[in-house]
Length: 205
Image 1 (cartoon, rainbow, N blue to C red):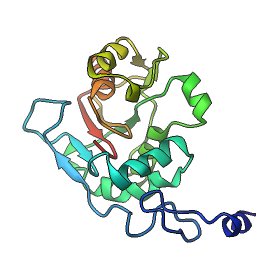
Image 2 (cartoon, helix red, strand yellow):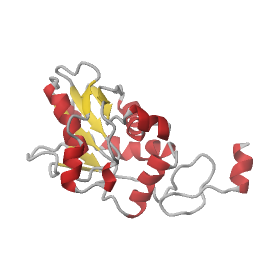
Image 3 (cartoon, rainbow, N blue to C red):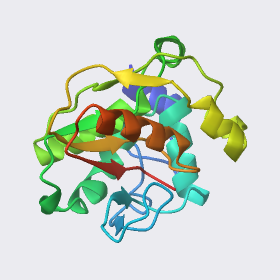
Image 4 (cartoon, one colour):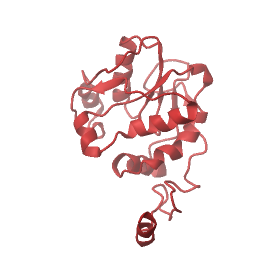
């Protein structure tokens, strides 16, 4: 049936809109080959590398994130995972991967959490488990529609611990970093819960 449907409605790459072969999520030309490791972000004022990402949230990368997040193109997570995984330093000594949670209502509406899909794809390559260490206890407006100050206020009291994080080195995973409000709020809860270290990974920023 899937082959028949692909014949009638050929799938296209979300990055460049070229036709895809069977079982591909992204064409070879748009599949990321490298990622960036940086100490410069809105998340921390430090000289220590703490963030892994593929590139700016524009063009083909923005379209790929959009397809993963809103169009059920789950395999994009597996397509971007190799490049992201290779850029994670062994010195981080990760114990667990934690996706930024969606509120249960929004996850029911969407049908999945794109950050968990990405975390699981990364974890499978690193041999590190993905666990829902956080839960979202407040339903908020979508961050993309808000200004900086509104985003920060929108995150007050939104997250809570869902499991023990004591002495763990945690990789916090989300799809996009913009103002940092969501990731900062998530990291703060992990740190308050006793996490040893929190690092960050996103597709785009």
